[in-house]
Length: 226
View (cartoon, rainbow, N blue to C red):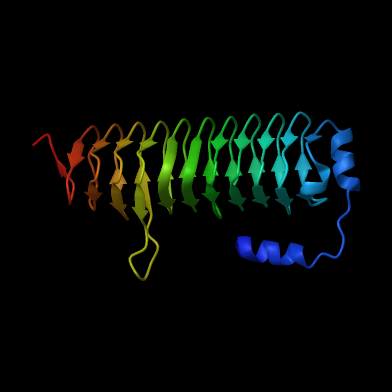
């Protein structure tokens, strides 16, 4: 199935001649709290578990599933995605992806097709995730792009990180193993493997694999332990 486009989604909604509020009332009766039924758009194919709260200006589209005790919105669009229990998604867009339990997404995050997060993940303001897996307890809080990557658990991305996944012809995949710290304004040029417990200094450009426990810095990044 072709991934959703945020532009095509709203073109489709714009062609709908009338909106029904009966499904929102059904959700409310089942234990979902909808702050303003007139300002949300929820397809009748969407599943929302009791205890979740939907804030104004939220669009829930397609085969989206919201687990229990989530906070969704305001100003959020979620299409064909699953949101795990006790997660918060605020002022963000999620397309064709899976969000784990106890996640904090937003504000102003963009999570694109075929992405997934495990539990206790934080994706913050102006962070874009595309076709990537984000492991348990990993965090990217500010101004970053992570594309075509496998990120393991307890990884921290500093502000301004870029995963340079496109070489002009192909999209390339990188792997970041457990407990890696990546400093602000760093770039990883895919494909590389960053082994567990490595540290990447701020402003570094990584174009080669990094050994477990190594500390690197520079352009290109070099080991500081040699």
